[in-house]
Image (cartoon, rainbow over all chains, first blue to last red; front, side, top):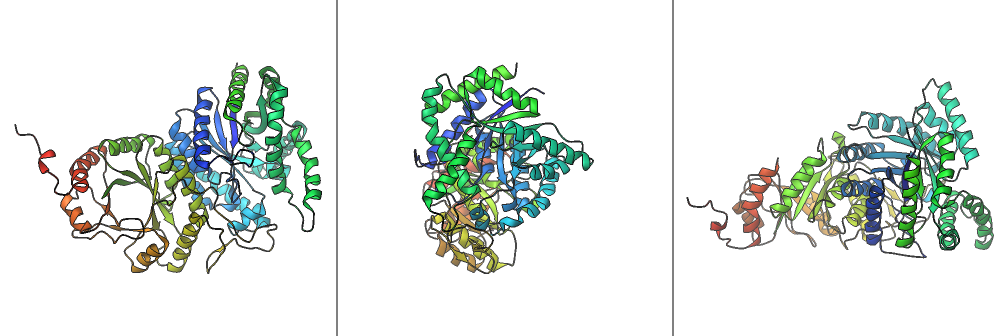
Length: 320
Length: 256
């Protein structure tokens, strides 16, 4: 199968540096989906978090419904739904209906989730998330496989342990953007070994998420992107390893900064030729879908659409 | 007076069948088109389906959703996002899935109302604690808020029930009351902003509905099995509900 490109992930955040009303942000994402379809992308992917001040999208399947209603061909996926917080009966029922109304275009990516405040909101102990996932994932996998049409299910992973859980169930991976190619390679090895040990013939249609920005003017766009990328990385970093009790904001930001610098190195930025070559490396690792994130916060519309058009040229080149 | 079409069960529904009904709802002058989820039958996604249909038609979209089956904050989030993607055209009927557990249902409905209000919530009840304040979850704030909020200042929500305690609860929370029609049934009393709603069979007649509304207003959601039935119901009901002493000759068959 040839390499496919998706757009995402989208969180519809009213970020402090450009705080648009959410009515506009959702109008924008529907427009972005139409553009993605017109440019020939495989799919668009939506992200989920809860109770955050910038209104990070908390209900992916509802947005997926709207996008499926607006488009005719484009795939729509969740990347990722935080399954241990949810009722698996609700997710399975929602996916069955929207998979059918979307005529097979809905995919689900699910992962553990990590932010304590979100678990606490729904009355779930964060520490139980692995156990809850072990129960919920086989149930959801069975329901997705039995749905008509089938709803493809991916397991979002950022660690080898999570990949091994997916391997035992024979489910494909949706790899997080923060892993570098070496880490991804090691994770796939652990995945394949766990599948072999469980006697499972592993699927090979894995997805990976990357931060990608296609531009003919790297210098100009890097200056524009840096504050957006810093906001995004500060937010995810702040959720992954929170400020400790008694730690000053200044000391904490210093600790975050090292992580932000490391993660920024994973950004793929350049013209279409450069980006196409970089994306081929992930195909060689064993991924057949690359979900490219160019919307980091709430970029000016014309800059974002220029990047989408550039990525559209990459998509054409890769599908040749 | 308002006129809705449906609710149409999402069990086995296809995009084509729903889009056909939605287009007929527009052509036949309905104010809204309704779909119904039923998680007990494996058909969820009521609000996502309404969001999908909102892209196809310009009228309002209603979702009948289960309440009491899963955490009410998920329901609040679905309502907010469906309302934002449809630019403020979502309406909701809460259907109480677990009969008999009044205290649980009451708590779920209260937390839903609180979340949609935009308040910074702290709820401590018998069934729900929001946020839970679980010791091991650190850091977690002592309150939380639904974010983003819906596009409408108040999303119209009805609770389907014939019980007195539901009417009292609806009145207190600013929700409407919905009931099933029977010959001679009055429309439920208006509560807060919303008229009482009656869920009617397809053969219902204009006089039935006008009698049901009495001196007040009513919201009548009329069932139909196919676009032809929807067209007939719309033609028969839309005029009389919108104008007192509607001239019957408008809808009468042409003389040969």
